[in-house]
Length: 193
Image 1 (cartoon, rainbow, N blue to C red):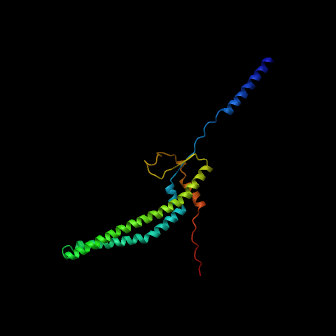
Image 2 (cartoon, helix red, strand yellow):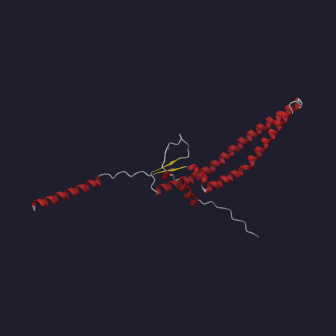
Image 3 (cartoon, helix red, strand yellow):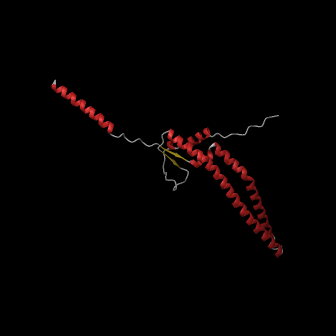
């Protein structure tokens, strides 16, 4: 009997010390949950992005058409100068050449201004949607336990991600979340008389 009670005390002591060691031994590190998102694609393809970029295109289409018309006028003058090389007087040729040069300079200036204005307006849209999308992505990542979320917008080699398993993409989920949180308000249909 003495042996069995000693055995029980040793076994109980071993269990207690193993339990104490288990409490002080750090747990195995959790496997990080990683997600990938193409933020540029998400910004352009969410409902709000599609609507804003369609409005932007509509806003700049008349300007683009005007530039195309001015370019066509310059080309017509160049053709006139080329076709009349043998028949036009020197003064007429000089006048056409001056008109073409002025037109080209004006067209280049207007095209640069249009490009700058378009890029500025585009940047405003991207930043506006991007700020909201970034906040939504942070919230989504925290709620779903992501350790890291990487942006795949840039092409390689500026993007360091060379391979990703198909299940880590969050872009479509982010777009769906954004569309729910920030729905596009459509104009009410006019009342029929």
